[in-house]
Length: 542
Image (cartoon, rainbow, N blue to C red):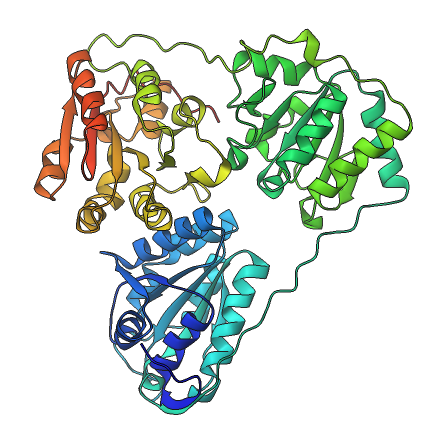
């Protein structure tokens, strides 16, 4: 490993050293003309780990999951032109998911404006909503990298550092540079809005507390408030698992709620929402907010009133505000609401049993058995598709960082790359991915072998209804022939074996029992293919 802090070195070495200076030890990517020497130097001379993907978009997705699980910026690198355009869906997913990532993207040489792979890369990045930083000169490489990392952290989104290929071997003096993020928790609010919020909470007889992705660091404080109020707690999808183990945990709030939890929420007279976006699926298109007071607390002022209008809005830290509410409730000697003593904890998280399939595997029954058989310390990743909402409801996680959702942009085919990234982030924990057949064909085939090469502890549950399920339903709803949505795929279990992993085909109860045994005895990437009837898979609960 290099031992000099300052030296005259090529730009690719300056960038690699800059990553090392920021404490970054893992980079995902696919090498090309403009980034191959950067990746090589990072791995060979800086002691870093370069994780090669089979597709450029996959590298970004791996880094996004790494950022989610570790709560640190993910780092990826690709070359120019089509390599960057291949990343557009992944970058948009990261923007919508508010995940910090730096993509070190090569650009064609400035001296050759007619380069075959030339494109306006700034415009490409702008279309995704990601940030853009230009590597200005070899002399500024360390500073430009530091600013890109800083922006990714404070803006909570991907930032692309655009690196002209003709800079990579240009030499300049390297001086380590780092922009430290100044972070302070928001002040506790004061004034009329706070008084109104406390008044609404104090007078509520059936309060419910909702926590979203912006409140995952405030579990203890929010639960103190819930117990003081005798209020049940619930989360948005992004914060799934935050209140796991609490007797009055309603789990997911909204269209994904159990019937009993939905009934509790519907009867509530006050919702206290911490760090929750309150989009249509959370509020059931506004139905769950009707005829009740809404107190919204969020550090992001732009989140206020974005979908439903709060009666009191506090731009403030979730934990500090929860503690402040408890303080003033105690000062005023407000009695608890008495709401939770009315509730039956055993019913709150009971979902409707699934119907028995007449021809193939019963999907919901399989999920219930998998919930018990899958390793309890798992990281759960879900690809997009009709199958996903039942997984969200019926497969648990121990905390929000153990739950990786790839549905922020509504795409399919993103799951397996993110599962690989999650496995790199937490190598001592198993990763479980639920994917559909269409999503696996789109984004899983090329990367399953990557998981094999990396010897990951990965279990893929492939929900194969041999159709694009969401579209299949639309044809049926209009009494039309759905055959255009149906596909005669290869046997995915055999494909998994051909790619170096293990594969088990499940077509009946005996096959499911064999699959559950294989989970317990796995020694590498395992794919379990559930053959489902497209007419028996439940509809998405959104």
